Image (cartoon, rainbow, N blue to C red):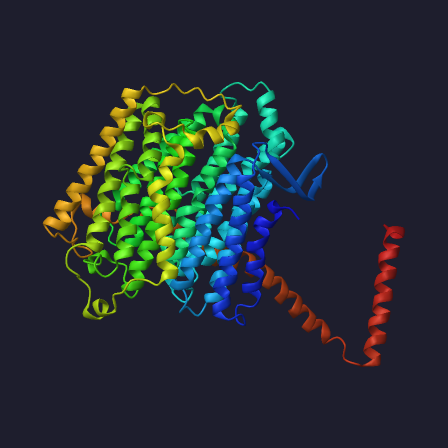
Length: 632
């Protein structure tokens, strides 16, 4: 058995062991089994990466579906993109598994939780390893299922169950678009294998703007909008914070929500020939980045701030894809996986110390009690704010440079989103770790740093958040853009025609971005540290601030436009069509048959004379019927 097939097999085995025996396997072993499965997959992925020759490898597992000339195999493809995704998924996933040992050890569903984590890892690996769109779709649906199970893990809470259902349903909307895109690919190309489809596109002489490719890419993008939380299918992700914090870090920061970006990068040759779709991708990404960043400005739940930050950062990735900066977008996927996972796990450490309190208005001064959490959280905050030399500076500025070259107005709005990001992240940092403690005496008494199983992953992620930018260091800093060079073969047929930004322009853009981020951080410091301002209690906001605090009432709008009309229509069909129509007709027929049967039963009275009379009467009737033709 090859290393390639072992990568998804280890998490599957972990799921089976912990899933079947979660009531019998001791908790001390559950965490070890689950974490060992993730680490084993990481070791295999790392070995493949270190020995990768540059030539894609295809592993055929078994023939799956054959219909006419269409053959769909369960097979894996290992190339530059899948290798990088494997390292991120298994590497960050392993750290989160280890973190979960400390975070979830008191939970009664400890074994079940690790089983679900392993199952998620298995499906995510299928998604990125599949050599065709159908295997990708199986993984795509699988991570959606696991997301539902993990978001609603504490299912005794009605709100958490509602959040899980919301995520599941909104993802189904996007998944329908993805599925229709696959059907169109089958109808047009007769295959779902990446090699076949992309080969036919490369050799088929397709012109830029080909209507079929535009239709396919738009449908695939609908799928990406759902999974990667873009406008209008983004509202599920902030509500998904109902799940345990390790779930937020694994699914909604580092892996599942980046599936849409992975899918577009994988399909880059089709997108490059569909400029109309790319323009839609870019503007939707920009709108999402700015819109979500503005909502994050006034949120007071520590995980909700990070949730809207995730939506915003995903918007930047799509903005990069829309201007054909494919490797730059993936660079941000990688750095974001490190610093956002760190932010969520750091938030989990704070929540753990605060006895499950998530409101930052009840925190303050925690840097003294939680020094490791504070330092690592500070590094992640600097990284996401785009301040050098940490990771986010390099990846975000690379995207903004490509956007500047594409459209100056788009760059200006992108910069605005970056400014807001820096402000709300430092606002979160200052309100949580600076000033005086604002919680209860009970909470203050129990404040303590998290155990090593939780702080060790924080420290590893902090190092990665600090140095990951050097993996793709630009030429102006003496680097050679290693990540972009490694990924270059993936875009060989995409004909990406992007003019290089001049060195002086690149430096100017970087200076503007850094100054803006630092200015935002200083403003946040003045407001929340120097002036010791604390956000008002719920409902005390007014005007625009109240609108933003209530997330522009988008959930209420969706409820009024979609949920209530569908609910009313369902009630109408139940009360009128189903009850008065279908039920009444069916039940009336049944009652009529029953009544006639009851009356007919009375004829069976057991009297021989009556039977003879009925027989003679019947014979006469039959003779009369037969002779009517003779006389008439």
